[in-house]
Length: 212
Image (tube, rainbow, N blue to C red; front, top):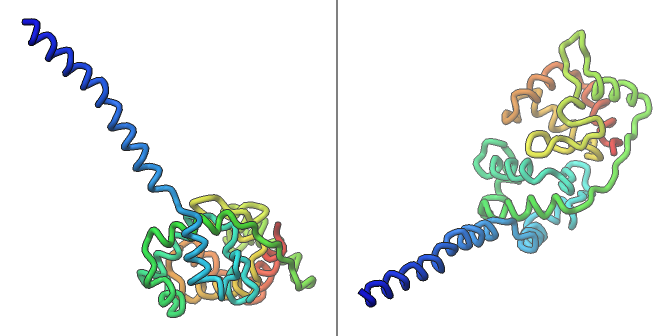
């Protein structure tokens, strides 16, 4: 009986020691899923910096600024370029060799990089751009950009991208793609862009460039 009691006691002690191990392993696994910002910076420097700038603040007006962008949005765009859902032969070529982990690391690293402010250039269109961005055009059922992208262009994390300070030329190109069916990943954007004429697109893009 004494031997049996000793065995039971030993088993209970063993169970009490082993029990906490499962949560500890789960926590360890969670740590591994965190983005590796150092790897993200390294991947970005090797693959993307030549077009988008060393810190994501592109100098070329045809290439978007990526710094301080919501990481979930960036990751989605990279995945869509890789799959072909968002069409760009240049971008698809660059992302083809990137894993989801690479793209995630880069997206979260870019989110930590401060965005450089932009500015509006066309003073004759600034009032029209502000009107569309802040209030839309009610008589034509055009929604205000601020409703999704916020009044200062900061966007809404994981839902709508940051726009403030973006190159006007790049924004014009994207609105034209949405309007003409070249970019099909967002029905709301396609519906808004379809109702804008060239002057209105230029005006709102220029206004966005000056937001901060």
